Structures are given as C-alpha cells and as structure tokens.
Length: 380
Ligand SMILES: *Cc1c(COP(=O)(O)O)cnc(C)c1O
Ligand SMILES: [Zn+2]
View 1 (tube, rainbow, N blue to C red):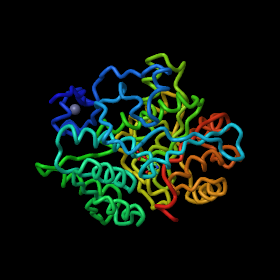
View 2: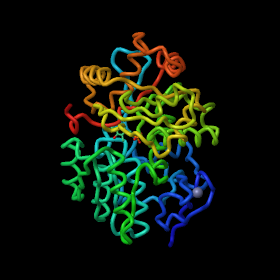
View 3: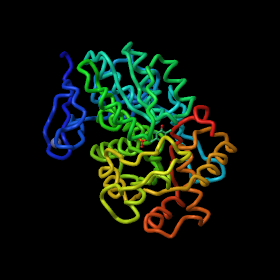
C-alpha cells in the first residue's frame, strides 16, 4: 500500500479498523467514522489557482488525489432564489449524475480503485445508485445496486446505462438495504454504502467548504433521509470552525417528509434517537428512510447548531416543486422539501410544534438551501 489511508473508528466502542479491511460496520452495532487525519484546507490564494471540482480541497480529503476518477463533481453554483431577497439556492442537481451523491460516490470509487476492489454493491432509493453506477463505470469495476421496485424509472435507466446490474427488491427502502448487505457478504464484494461508509461523508463535507468560499450563510436548509448531505455538511463546518476559518457553525435545519419522518418526530418530542414510525409512501422518495443508520448523530448535529428537523406534507412538496419550476429550477419532488418548509414558515402555515417554533426564526431570515436532485429522473 503506497498510500497511508486514515483508519475507521467505531462511534460506539471506539475499535479501529484499517479501511483496507472493507469493514462497513462494527460487530458491536456501532457505525464507523474516519479516525482523525488532520484535514487542512489550503489558503484562499492557493484555492484560487485550483480547478473547480471538490479535488480543490485535496488536503482535506481522506484519499490521495486521483484526477482520473473525477467526473468534474463539486463547485455547484449558488444563485438567488426568486421572490425571496434573503434566500440563496445551491444547485446540487447540476452534479455529473444530477444529485449531490456524486460528492460521496467519487470518494468511494477512489477508495475502491486504490484498494483494488473487484465488485461494488450498494442499496439506494435511486440517486446514490446512479452516482455509484457512474463512478464504478469510470473506474471499470462491476457494480450491483439494490433498489425498491417502486424506484423512479428514470433513475433505473440511468443506472443500467452506466452498466450497473440493478436488482429490484419488493418492499421498502429497508428491504433493499437488507438484500444489499446479504449480497455484500460474498468474498469478492465490497459494500459501498453511502449511509454506512464514512468516506462518503468526507466527500459530502465539501458542500460546506464550497459555501465558505461562495459566502457563508447564517442558516442552511437541507433534505434529510439517511443524512449523508446533512452530516457531511456538519463535518465540513466543524472542520472550518476548528481551523478558525468561520466564527461559528451555521444553523442547520433538516427537512423530511411527514409521511416518513422519524427524525422530525424525534426533534419535536426532544428524543435523542429516531422515532419508531410506520412509513407511508411519499412523493419524496429520496428521503423515505424509516430507520436512518446515523439517526442519533443527525439529531445531535442539528441540535449543536441550534437547528432542528422538520416534516412537510406531500401536498406542500407538490406545491413547492411547482413553485421552484416556475422560478426556473427543475428538481425532483424530494428536493422540494426545503422550499416547502421555508414557505410554510414564511406564510404562517407551519404547525404549532416545538421543532417549528425553533426553526421559524431561522427560516424567515437569511439562508441557503440545497436543491439536491434533478427533476428529469422523477417526473411526478
Ligand atoms: C439521497 C438524496 C437525499 C437525501 O440524502 P440522505 O443522505 O438520505 O439524507 C435528498 N435529495 C436527493 C435528491 C437525494 O438523492
Ligand atoms: Zn463498535
């Protein structure tokens, strides 16, 4: 091994594992994080000379830079929202495979290439699978994706176009995850899970670094299912704070579907753990996660910033998606949840609940929201 890769550490029992072991969770039941590796951001004058991809932060990433794995991911634009002078929109749907998942997928693909992994397995509600399919194709490694049978045809077509073997699993998102974990037990397989593999979060943390360059917001509004964008952003903001590049963490407001909102329910009741819920189907398929793998970490992260997690209804999502389209942003319904929450807070349509009471002052002030995935994949 010519590169020194930072090891993984269990968040519960603190056992360390070399990343080369392809371990994706601890036998104690804990999830893994990357052990400290002294991430550093280059100075602004140095950054000005770098390409407009997330590899501009190479010193802060847990893998050595391998330009040939890049599809040009990162450095998505930030533009003003229409109609709200104090809201800005980060266009994550302009990523190479049309969602923010490319930020994490490029880390997993780079790692897979370094380690000589022969087969990648993942489960997905769609966009993690399309991202991994594209990056697996880029490194020439076969890839199998387990998805709920109800996944949008546009996403399935995209995975197959990149050469992935797509397995349609009857049932919900959790059933797809179980099937993928079972398949990943095979000796030549590696579970490239966006929610379990912590290198994914070190890709999505570049979302925060970019906001630092593009203008730090007071409040960031993000969609949440497994929390890979939210936890990555939180990690990035923490690293910026540790290097004294920002004076404080921005307030992070996460938004779920009320039909499948274990974190929103927990935030409202003040519980540190995701609520046990019975999920109802939702238009927001990309965040229909009943059992978020890092749920406690998500709740702790938003609380540490003074933020919270909200739930929005499918009707609000439908309206918000149309409003975004009318403003020129064509995103999938999942990506409209943040706009729906902002509108609810600003029009007084928000429910009288503890989480909304916490969020409303922030949602009615200056903020940046993420538009996470493109509309063409999910026409309804
Ligand atoms: C995956 C996804 C999300 C949610 O990401 P999590 O990591 O599950 O929180 C939001 N929007 C889109 C478009 C996605 O693909
Ligand atoms: Zn452990």
